[in-house]
Length: 88
Image (cartoon, rainbow, N blue to C red):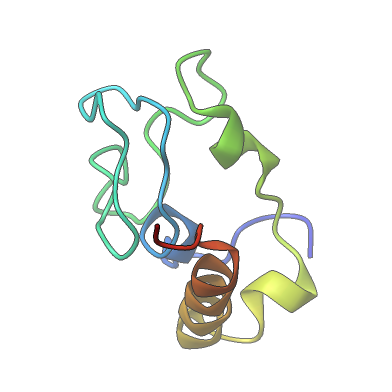
């Protein structure tokens, strides 16, 4: 897989992003739609220098994206939970 699935947007919803995003200066929590995710489910700031490095690091793959948006949401949600820092 080399490009995003049409009308998916799972990687812009499922994970938390701790760095600033234009329009979301404190990042976003897991499960919250990024303000930069357009109605077409595409990133409005793709390729822009203000796009968080975390986002640029997410590359579509068979493992991450699965064969449907639902599978991608599930995988990314599981990854988010597995990598969440432990509560103190």
